[in-house]
Image (tube, rainbow, N blue to C red; front, side):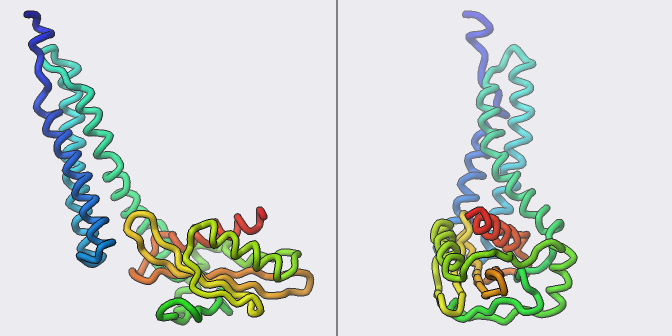
Length: 241
């Protein structure tokens, strides 16, 4: 029997792949448990932190194992090492982006295109007032170009288009008032299902309308840019239509 036939899978690849699978399971437990209300946000993040740690160990073991499997003729299983790396990367990348975004985005969770006279929530659960000039100053420094959108169209046309975009994005409508030019909705994040509240205000202007949005997170003191991206995405879609 040849040496090639006697080659065994390098143990580091086996362990790394196993830990990569374990990391995925822990991450799913964190997400599903939070959605099922088994634990609070911070507990869910702590559990995901363990998933990140396990994924990091799996990544290192698979890197070493794959290298040894390729360089050493006694071992095989490089593909297992690559698979373990691929399983670990999404969790490690998510954890990195989560921490990185907390540093690069303004430490606020309530964003408005009009910080002087921000849109008001009426229909969402526990409506809150805009936090004030301190948050407005931080927003201005972080997003200096975020502003109202002026459109040369009738209020009804803009209202209908705005409502269609809300539905297309899958936001849950909390209330509408066409006469007042107001749409309120709740946007849900993909993984953990975090709830962010959005109000759209359409105000008649001299030759069209002025569209303003306000988006706020229900929980957490910072939003890691989620509300700003939501507002920009909506305004871009509305302008395109």
